[in-house]
Image 1 (cartoon, rainbow, N blue to C red):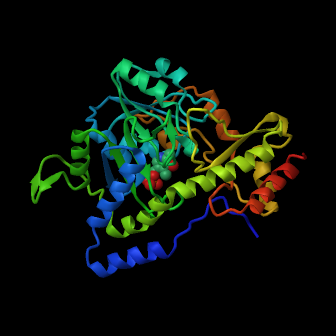
Image 2: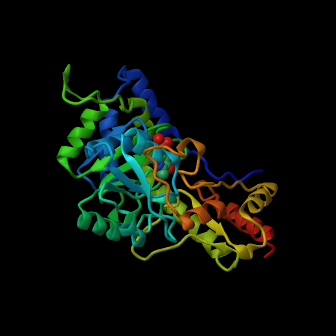
Length: 366
Ligand SMILES: *Cc1c(COP(=O)(O)O)cnc(C)c1O
């Protein structure tokens, strides 16, 4: 009997809407996608949401929408999923990195030293569902005249200073199978800027405004009606799903916070965390390392996950890449060797959360 680190819950509402699409004869982007976009815009508190085929294509389109030139740099977090980096490269830009803080996100204190004369975009990642310190990040952006593109792929409904993520700059969401809301594969870009939204819609559909009237070189990044039909009922349930994640996280923290060898997720008064992952740091004091804890949990029927085992540019395929500029990022490097994510998803019962707590405590000998 294993307690899984993530779980998907799709019900009768999703089945009914998907069937409605199948019977409608309209499969590609249409009215369901428009309904889904309205829900995403509502979640992010923005005027526009433009659905895309994935979180990765959302990031590429967002970067293309700010119209970068070759040599322009995008400053991002080194502690993220590889899609963040690949999107920067796909958009033709150069990736540079800024070390993380205790929230596992881009540290505003390190931004000034990482900005160069070629920096055009700050691209914070709201990792694990913890909103980055957007007040400080947007201050840097306005002082230096930079665009902000938020990688909110893991942070549906999180906020900073009462404002939803995805509304501080150009917001990019993913609806991949394991994300807090899923359309199997899917993404969306959020913005208040009419001109950016217009450009995103063009980029998504081959750069075409009217039939055979091409204005820019575009892509096919469209979402299907089937994907949107899966997402609509989940967006309706998002507040309840997020509340369940937060309740589970609070219970985990209550049960684990006294352990000297574990650092529980940082909490900030003015930011919300939607716990896409509940991620602890296994410190030197624990007596065992991260991989031993993971193996110990598995032996006790508790799943866990490592997100992510290396800093994003630390792979052979990026070494010597002309548009990947490695940086000295000791905090991200340390996190990569010490983080472990525990089950926190909304389907877990209190008894299962308590089993996770007991298993962790046994493993670290507490
Ligand atoms: C999932 C994810 C993406 C990419 O989204 P896809 O929908 O898988 O393309 C980008 N950034 C982060 C941080 C993610 O977790």
